[in-house]
Image (cartoon, rainbow, N blue to C red; front, side, top):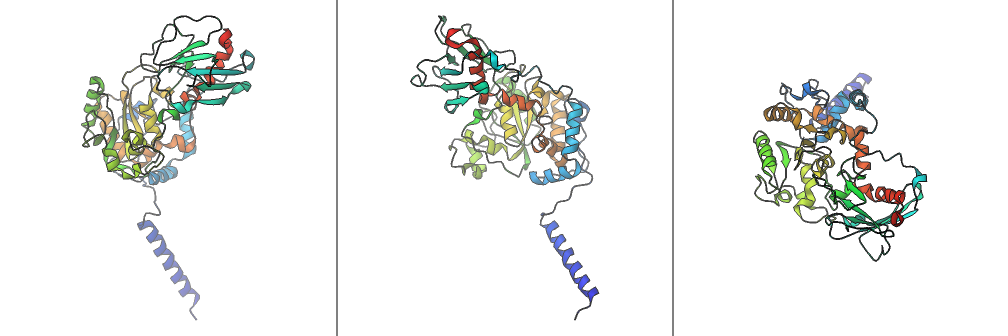
Length: 406
């Protein structure tokens, strides 16, 4: 019969070996006590030009970085910080207020939208919608289903120059940077809050049939993903200037350095395993992006409120966008979710910051805290006025005008 002290020694030894095994196998991960928090909030630009982390702690496991952030920072502190930084919790001027619709102003209970001519508008937007105030909305490209439409929607072609009473209203949509009206429309749909109906690029319908696999591991040798096949001189010059300072992969026609346009699927074969998506390389952008810590997003044109899928793709893929574009971009994105490249004194300072951030799991994880902690701010409104909700919002304004009787 063993004595009780001997049993305690055996049990303690076994527990010690168990903990040591779990730690070595990385099942248990303890936070690095000296990891600094780099926090480039738009209202705190002094921290956007830090010295490199004196104790680099490169990481590839995104979930491990999240666990360290949870221990050192956590959602409570993050939410408090975001609240202190937000000076306007209401609707900003960059977004339309869609909450103030009066049901009494609707003159019709059912509105039919017929999309005319060739358009890039996704076919799966066609549907019968149940909207607010008991309004129903039929959105279709079929003149058979919509033989008596209340409004005709044009996007790549110009509406009729004249409209007689009893004819459908004319809606015209232009989401390009110039945002030009046709001159003949009764309702204009654009990305700006000043337009009759606003439609942002934040919705899911801008990336149909995409592979949504998100890698839990980040490439630490190659930090930046970039893909562009429209080689505009200004954008190419800016991209080249930054990318020469950072390890990167360029997958598009512009500055391609991976050996071709279809190399993403060769490099990440798991991206080709989604049976619901096609084999075209650009249908796997999200999956490919998710392997990188950063995605470079440069708009074709710099103008107010013009924030396109280039940025929102990166957010959806679990990467941190390095963004060059709309000066009011922070009105449209989640808090502390992007690196605004225009806020740095030079491209060299931006590259130094990105390298430091890549070696700091806590600071990097903070860029993902918005979705993990449920801090949406104006991003919730950005999605609420996206293409996804356009049918009901267009039908509401048609109903208020009276449709064919307008």
